[in-house]
Structure formats: structure tokens, C-alpha cells
Amino acid sequence: MEQRPDTGANRNGKRPRWGMAIDLKRCIGCHSCTIACKGENGTPPGIFWMRVLEQEEGKFPVARKVFLPIRCNHCVNPPCVPVCPTGASHQREKDNLVMMDQNKCIGCRACVVACPYQVRFLAEDTHGYYGETLTPYEAKSYQKWQPRTVQKCNFCVERIENGLQPACVQTCPTRALVYGDLNDPQSELCKLVRERSHFQPRAELGTDPSLYYLT
Image 1 (cartoon, rainbow, N blue to C red):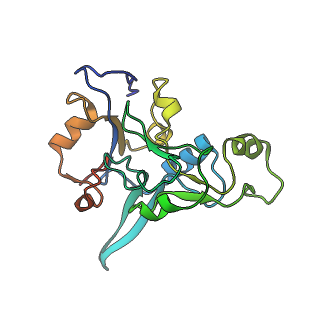
Image 2 (cartoon, rainbow, N blue to C red):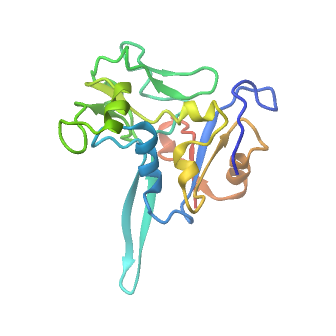
């Protein structure tokens, strides 16, 4: 169901805190989220704001594959923000999203090293998937990116501010991805977190990630 977020205060009078739940029982490892993310954001080769890790568990004849989608967690206490010397890596006050300002980024990689989730990428160049000659789509998309600057998931901020779901959520065929406002107890996301067993990635670090894996 399409969600229509309010970019100001939510129904409780609080500022929204956008987050996501990933249902590991529903994820089938189709990588639709990865492709949708690249299609929406036009990222260069080797840069994946959303990707799916795979692991085999058990032994024959009882063996299975486990899939784990990973992305920027938009932490409440993001370690990537205070280490940035220019303020390029910053956290929006109005909704907690951790963003990158490429006009301020000097490519020092301090935020890449500080991120414990390995979801930040330095764009080395703007070559396309088929060599130095860009396709029309790549030529248009790459205008947004500057070489030698850091990229990361921005939660499809332009989409959610226009009442649309993030591209990865919209595309998931099994509805394994659910996004919403963690400051709204009535949101579908909050209901799932209350009702289902879950974990936050590396919660012991105190980052308070806005990502929950439902188990």
C-alpha cells in the first residue's frame, strides 16, 4: 500500500523519523531492490546503495540459503557525521536522515572508515557500465555525481517528500521491505516492530540504526 508521509510533524506532533523493516522470512534474494535502487539513482559501476548478501546454512540434505539486504541505516547516532571535516556528511534535523552534500565532500573517506556497516562508497570515476562512452541514461544520471566524492543511500528522499515509497520498497515482489515513521506508533512499521521478533544491525555499537530485521 502506498504511504503518504507528512514531511512536517506526524499525527503525534513529532518530527518524523524515517526507518525500514526487512522481513527476512519474506526475502527471496531476487535482488529487485538492488536493481531498483540503481535504476532510480543512476549510480556508477561498483556502487550499490542497496545490496543483498547471501549465505548458505546447514548441511545436505537440510541446507538453505539466507539472504540479508543491507543499506544505510540512517542511525540516530551516526558515527559517519562527526568525523566529517567539512560537514558534507550531515543529519537532517527535520527527519533524522543522514545525507551527503557532494559540494562539500573532499573525498577524504573519513566517513567511509567510520561507518560500521560498510554502506558508503567513493565514486572513483564516472565511467559507465559499457566503457568510457556513456549511454544516454548514464550521461543524464551521472550529472548528479561528482568524481572522488562519497555516495550513500539517501532513502529516496525526493520520492518520500512527494508521497511515494522508496524505490526498493516499491519494487519488492514479496513485500519484504516496509518503510515508515518510527515516531508514529500507528505506522505499519512500528506495528511490525512491536509484534515481530527483530534485531537492529550491530545495535551494541550504540548507533541506534533506523533499520530492523524481522526474524
